[in-house]
Amino acid sequence: DAKTTQPPSMDCAEGRAANLPCNHSTISGNEYVYWYRQIHSQGPQYIIHGLKNNETNEMASLIITEDRKSSTLILPHATLRDTAVYYCLLYNFNKFYFGSGTKLNVKP
Amino acid sequence: NAGVTQTPKFRILKIGQSMTLQCTQDMNHNYMYWYRQDPGMGLKLIYYSVGAGITDKGEVPNGYNVSRSTTEDFPLRLELAAPSQTSVYFCASSYTSGGAFRETQYFGPGTRLLVL
Image (cartoon, rainbow over all chains, first blue to last red; front, side, top):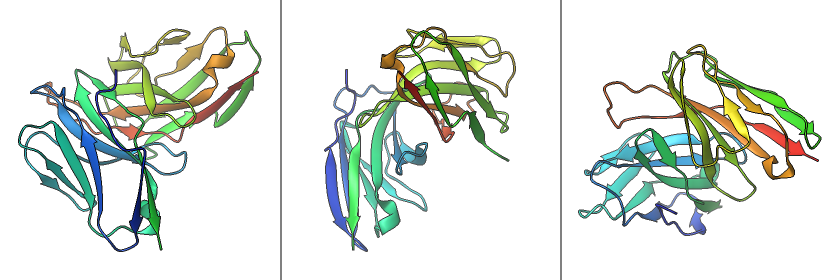
């Protein structure tokens, strides 16, 4: 059972903001939302996580809706090196559940 | 720190053969994980460990075994290789204390396994 739903692919122009949506309508109260990305076939790389409030770090911003049923990852100024598959995950009882992710294509 | 290392990088097995995928981390993390990733798909959890001597099943444990005798090492064993086990295998580790839901997993580079 998929716990998160993401669009399979998105395009973004270099230098523009990339907004990647994620639906997690069955999220429970103590589940955190995590975002990872995978470049080519490398191991996934942590980006950001949050519970209720919006979060920002040096890589990205995470916007979580008030009902927590969806979230958006924002890369403020996408570069070609941000081309990757982005996974939205829920963390629950020692386990991460990876979906199929969104392939972000950053174009010159 | 080397982080999470995995060996081998690539292996071809014949059906029915056995092998062990090695994973080592030097960050003193208590949690370790094994995932598999089939082409075009997300990662699926095979087994995980919350500390030395403690392991538990993930989503897809059938056909695999694990052990955790030290904090650093978490090998994954395939006893009777099958074509369905052709995949890329990732090991990961993280540190968690007090049950806080604030894990960040660090992944190894992966092992590509082809079973023919």
